[in-house]
Image 1 (spheres, rainbow, N blue to C red):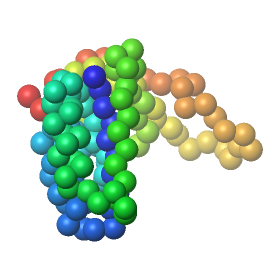
Image 2 (spheres, helix red, strand yellow):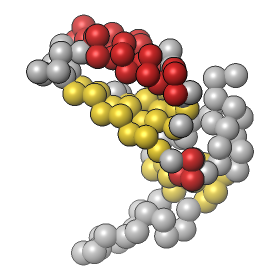
Image 3 (cartoon, one colour):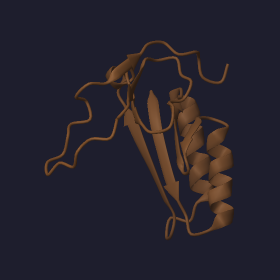
Length: 120
């Protein structure tokens, strides 16, 4: 299964511990956000270790399970995408006139197929 894990803590120490734990299992994609595939047993082990590190009264860890059908593409706006073993959608934007209504993000993405495998 593919997971996205985001966390926050008022404690610098716990944030650092969570980051170090997660970077051993997943790709570090933003300040406090990690993503990647985990086998069910490895996921359960990771959740157990996260629970030991965090203080549920003040810390927050959000885990999003992504179905296999959603692995086929990622939309990235801004910095380049991670190296990954799945196709990536990159949305680039040139300066545009101001609009009063939002523009859909999926209006004309450039698809970059099959980047190299992550972490290998």
